View: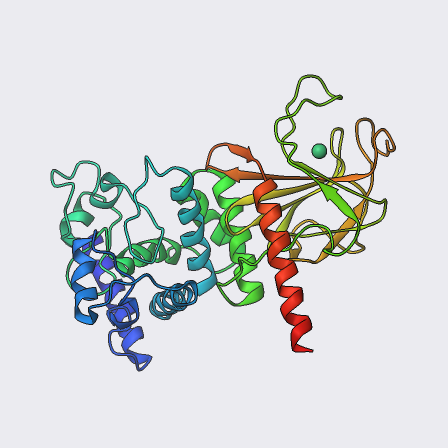
Length: 366
Ligand SMILES: [Zn+2]
């Protein structure tokens, strides 16, 4: 019975897609061409038709991904930015844990284990037959209508995620519940909801430009201070870079992101934490104050002023002046279960140079 209902449901999905004047919307393979690598046999077939194996530019990848999201969205009514958010979250986790998660698709980062895809008790863990996968309670679905639920096919992978979301309502709370039932991790739910807000706000995928946290051209100095000892709070290593600048110099977001944390912390003083789409947490500490009307949950852009350099911290709320004013800037990477700090110094150098170059070319145009 379950089988019948699900099949009927799927038929409705496909019919809706066809009705939208795009015959077999999910099946149209064209936009995925060129994304393939020779390593993935299923997908390589498609790429050989175009004969191109050159690497796609970032712009091409964003375009192809957006087409993929739009196509699945059209067939399932799940908004593209929610699909994009899940896809991007999964991509960041695969990047952080490459030993336990393979890159399955060419464009999507969505990962399901063989067991999840085919069903735990399925004797054929490489099963691609939708009916038997369903029978064994596997999650794998056939999204492109070729009769196979293929774990390495972008459309099948993304459609499988979308199918899960379709079982819930459209409200943000429903989305969060759907994510909880999928990941069983509040951290994962928070991330995907954050990402979907960022994508929805900007309406595009190309959100990886960065800025230096202090206005380039103002007076500041910094050097690599990763891992050096600290004077306050017991034995801790220094997880970040100190950028020395005058009291009140603007502190700016380095990325497109969402304000995750804002407020007092005994070490960091007035601090702010911003999450970006790489699943990095950007931490700005010792501020003298925050930009007016900037709140938790707000979306920020690279270069947007979020507060001002100060010397707050090392004590009770309001403690200040225990050290020279500077911006402590740290970056932490979410690995799904834990967060790791890494040395932001090389990134800072790069963003500083990039920004200087952008300013130079903007000046030339004038
Ligand atoms: Zn510091």
